[in-house]
Length: 352
Image (cartoon, rainbow, N blue to C red; front, side, top):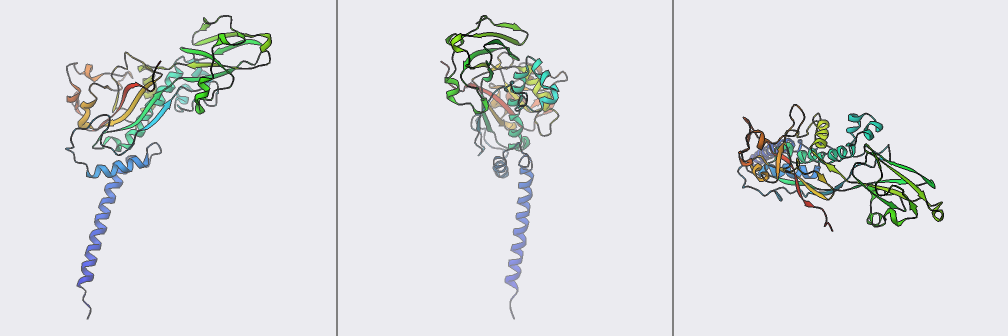
């Protein structure tokens, strides 16, 4: 007669393995479901963080802001204001602002459109970072992306022998010439090095350098020299970004209705009120776990949306003597989740 003892033991072990596997699967699914199913999250990063969260204890030692404890590698990106010369692409990097403005014409009529769009592009980084760090429930901090803010380039071809070019949405610009159209989504170094000054051309610009200004428009009259007739270079409007709290509030106004956007868990550069975000600024976007909030005391201030849709500084709002290290409470509300921070860290490249 065959013994059934071994079979029973094997059966019990098999059942236990199935139970353990099921339990682990539930844990992993719970963690991963925070972001891996979103097309704005980095699935590989979210999965890695989900596994790491399973074995990370709540009493983890304090981390450093620039490294954190995540396995995810931060991505490097360059963002620019949109090319407003193409009506079909003006909202490419800030699609939700199309509903905010309603039309191409209304967008161009707003002197701050370019900066609003750039602010939207920047603040959009918060959502994917939030999802990657399990909707703020990760037990460790980490960086998500390193953003370089850059100038935008708009090309206007000088087709006629004489005429006028109107630069719209152009509050703070620099004007150059180029022998070809610049496509900033495919920008290469030779495009920049190939720019030349207006006075170095065979084209007369009567008002140069004091062009005619009308609100946010710049009117540039030109006339080609006789030996230059038939040639059609491009006038390049180099738009200089200046993103301030007003632009960020416009962006957050669109984000506040989006699911999984951490509208109440944002921290912006501490000096954002006094100092605009401009070209060459390097902005690091990351997640800081709730018990490590004191790490961003000096780097950033906390941002919130009030009834009047303004950015506030809780360090001031709750009595300026409070330290960020003790800000586990805003008023009487305990901060249980982490924050997405935007930290200004110098320049992206050396300035001559």
